[in-house]
Image (cartoon, rainbow, N blue to C red; front, side, top):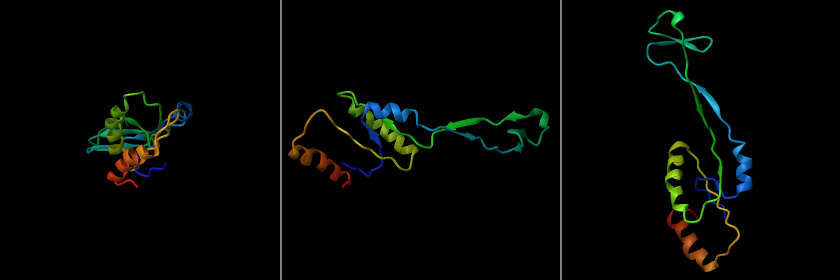
Length: 124
């Protein structure tokens, strides 16, 4: 089932291991604050002071994309809600993909329990 709601969670351990190595980290150089001047070469002067008191600009590592792929242990699915809410606050677009295997569900249970909850959430 394809959900276009915003959270991308793939539940398959093999894919997870592969995607963990694909997570990209991009350093972001801090910007000068009030009273600081950029110095070519990565430093700043404070309050128009002497360049001999050069302070290195702090480097902040950020992730521009996040892909998680993991198996949810039985009975632990409710623990994901806090993590998902946190991720939604940090990223504009979040998608969920659920891949359930090695079991079965009645078509009526699927309609009554899964599709109905999605309808109530505005996900059609």
